[in-house]
Length: 422
Ligand code: GLA
Image (cartoon, rainbow, N blue to C red; front, side, top):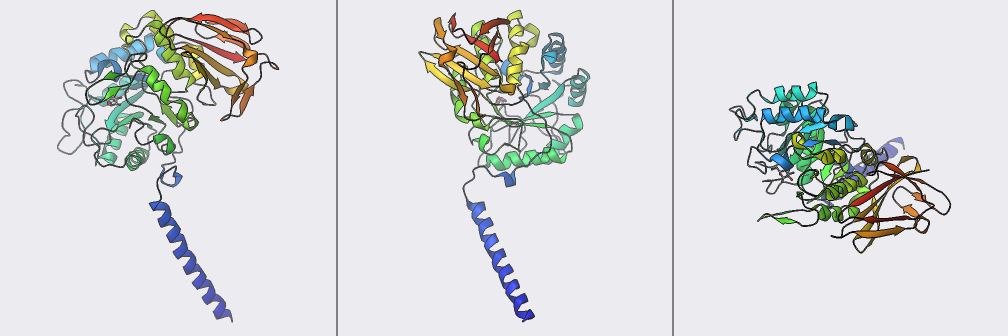
C-alpha cells in the first residue's frame, strides 16, 4: 500500500515536471512582451529621478579632445549647472582610436586624449561630477569607431577601471542582433563589474524598449535623433533628424512606461543650439513636463545669459525631478494651443500652455471649467472645489490662484508653465 502511494507520487511528480517544461517552452516561444524573468533586475537605485547631465554630441559630434572637455568641466561648475542639479558629464561618439589594441582592448584616441581616459574621469570626479562614456552594441559605433559586440565583459571591466559612472549604448551596425538580448548582455556585463554604472539605452525606440528595458537600464531613447529645430524635421539622406515637436508628439503614447529608474528618453537637449529664446523655453518646459532625462547638449563655454537662465531654472527642474516621476498628459490641443498636465507629489500639479503656432495666441483658460484627472496616478483636482496657488515658473513670480481665469497672449512657439500648489 505504502509502495503504491510512493509510486503514484513519483508518476505525478514526473508528469508535473513534463508539464512545467512544456509551459516553460511555450513561454520561451511566445512573442516577447514585458518579460521580467530575463531582465537584469538591478538592485541599484541610480536614477530615482530623471538623470541630468551634459553630453558632447549635439554640439561637437566627434570633434572632442581632452583640452576642450576639461574646459567644459570647469564651465559646468562655474556656470552653476552642477549646482542646479546636472550631474553626469558624458563623452559621446568619437573618443576612441579607430582600432582596438593587440589585446583587444579599446583605447582612447591618443591624439585627442594624450593623458588617457582615467585621467579625464579623475578630473571629472574631482569636480564633484560623474563620468559617462559612449559605445555601441554593434561591430562599430555610428561614427565608425570600434563597437562592443563580442567584447561586452572586457569593455565593461575597462570602463569600471577608469571610473565610468554612465554608459550610453547605441544601436548602429547591429545586423541581426536581438535588441533586448544585446542590451541585457551589456547590462549584465556592467553589473558584473560591481561598479554602479547607469545604463542608457539608445536604440531610438525601434524595438519598443519601454516594454522590456525597465530593470535593464535606467533610461531608453524613445525616438530618433533630435535636431535644433522647433517643428521641422531635417532630412539627412539615409535618415531624418527630428524636430522638437515631432519628438513631443511621440511621447504621450508611452507615458505610462515612465517612472523611477526607467525613463523614456526624449533625446538630449538642443537648448542654446540655435532656436529662439521662446523655442528653447518651450523645448525645456516640455522635457520637464515629460520627466525626460535632462542632458544639456550646448557649448557651455559660450552659453548666453538666456540659455543659462533656461537650463538652470530651479523651479522648472523641480517639476522635472518630482519624486513621483509621472510624465505629463496632453489634456487639450486646439488651434496649435496645447495644455499639458503633470501630476506632482503632494497632490500638486504642473500645467504648461504651449503655443505651437508661428504667431502669438490669446489664452483664456477658466480653471473651474477644466478639472484635472489623471488615470495613471489616480490624481485629480476640481477647481470648483479646491483652489490652488499659481506660480509662473518662467516669470518667476506668483500668479494668483485658480479662482481667476488665466488670460494672456503667448508668443509664437513659446510656453507658459505653472506650478499649482494648495
Ligand atoms: C546615434 C545616436 C546619437 C549619437 C550618435 C553618435 O545617432 O542616436 O545620439 O550618439 O549616434 O554617433
